[in-house]
Length: 310
Image (cartoon, rainbow, N blue to C red):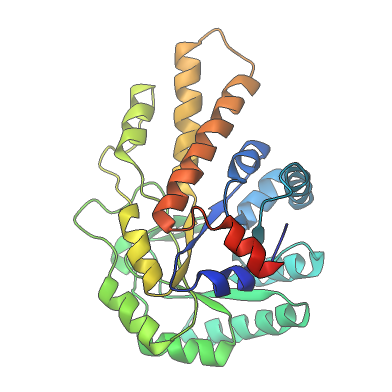
């Protein structure tokens, strides 16, 4: 059952975080239906697989898992893509990403999208601050990354009318994460939550980039940076208690895909049927989702969520 993102946030706020996973294909969709979650379709995914094809895949898998409860969200959309998703009647929420623009322009763009979305009953996520790394076609050097200012966050929400805010609190996009002792800035999360009590915060760039996955990929012929590190997913629960209600995870799912397929074709060089490793990936991705749900605190909440939205 597709529900609104706002419904999930209301249930989860300061109890646990809802995992938001980017999908691009059928295998990811099949592996995902394990707990309350948010399916994210990025602008790049909509271009890669065709937006209507992805929607059809999600509808088909939903029919196979009628007990599932989830929302569908546009991740990192520009203004026009947001409007396309709002008008489609399929999405629960959209993210307008104008964080690279000056504050006033970011507010104005978000305000326009909010007005259009609210008229159709959708909620809007916006972003303030800048994460380092690569997301879609936007690249931000780590030295230019900027943590979200709590006072600006309060002003932004009041002026834009957005329903949730993606904040820069020490994470980064992509597989090539920070390599030092950097991690989540809990003092900054606390300050933002104090400025915006009761308001859902979103954490982007939250993949943990497990060392075991990187090592196995490289042992099977990959050449990933062995020093790449991500967010310690043991910190998710603490962040959730401070108002982080949605946690975006994309890179880790891609690493699982790469590991499964590299190892399969290394061990079966005669193979050519992509369905065999595809089935293995569905199982591995499902196990990955279950593990992340435990770290987010959302595991075992499906009955509670179902009762709340029924």
